[in-house]
Image (cartoon, rainbow, N blue to C red; front, side, top):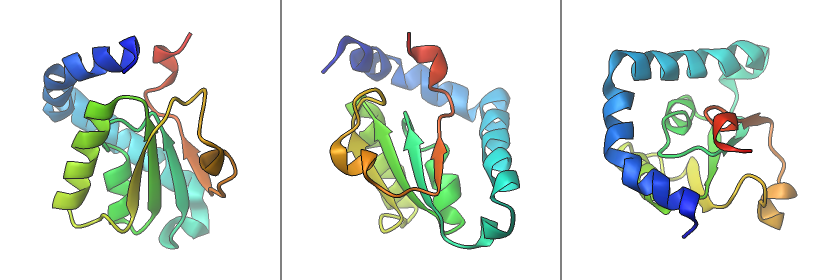
Amino acid sequence: MSEAAEKFETAMPAWKQWQEAPWGRLRYAIAEANPLRHFGERADEPLRVLDLAGGDDGDALRLAVRGHHVTIADYAPAMLTAAAGCVAAAGLTDLVSCVEADANALPADIVRGEFDVVLCHNLLQYVE
């Protein structure tokens, strides 16, 4: 596990607390509204979404509930484990897949994949 991934694993309890706080909930509501605004007429058809650094599924679950197929790519195993648990609890395992990968070194099948949308919410501040 990389040093950066270990940081995220250690920070999971604080991250969950922030997500449940008003500012965290607001962030996810805004992050959901922004791409939907750009989907236009396609908002109601199932899109293929790549969620780079998708973490514990805060964005992916909201999109999957709307019927979109989401691939979460994240390098933190603890985040992906949390995502898989939330997805399973919501009964959306057929719409969300988790891939352990660094956004700077994606596996070939992801790079060659055909996605309609790529999300990069909450990623840039963690890369050099």
